[in-house]
Image (cartoon, rainbow, N blue to C red):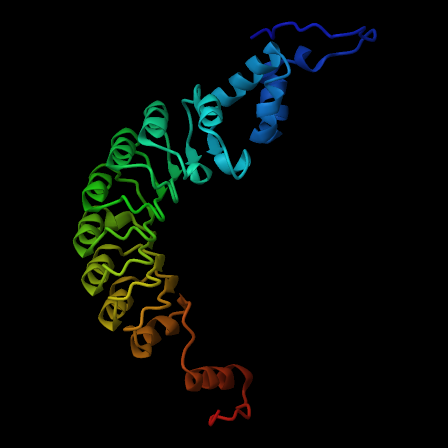
Length: 300
């Protein structure tokens, strides 16, 4: 397209080229505006009508939007303007909008961007099942989703996600405290085959029943966070060791019913575990690695 002409505001040197005289789609959009932070784009669009049109054209072609690039706080009006023409987003992160983001703000954006693959709504506590339903129904290619600290997420909301998102591989449900074993069991029975990363951290309602079913249905699971899941015990961990050969990291800090014998099999496989082994096992490991036994006062 031909860029609109803009008055220079002063005499122009012979042979000089103004920024807006450069080809928009071949030069300005792919090589210049793509490197300008969103925060600066908001300022740039105020310079003139021509710059505003240029910025809007760039925003309409965005594939990735992270509100954090605008700043720690972004207004509802700014978000609406930045995303009003975007129809090809593949990644969307809205954590900085957590204090005010509502269904009315989010649902239209989801409806215009069915190609979304990665969405982060961490801490967005003003949303409801309606938003998650719109995401599940309108974005069938969804692969990664963070709902951390979204306490409105319950079993019914998660059920819709499990039913409609066949590509889901990474899911963060940290501190979604309404979720109980039954909801996790339904999720993994429907989508467990493709799950590679799952966080159920900080949820005292999740116990061994959920973890055991998870293990039996998630053969590709690589990362599992159970931090602070007080009802999870050694039985659940032993099932993980038996059924999850791809597991690479396990977080069980503050899981007080998980004993070392249930973790030892995973340690031998090289799984990264955030709980240190008992002292005597650490000494044996050190001896094997260094070829000597250090002098340690075991009476301390």
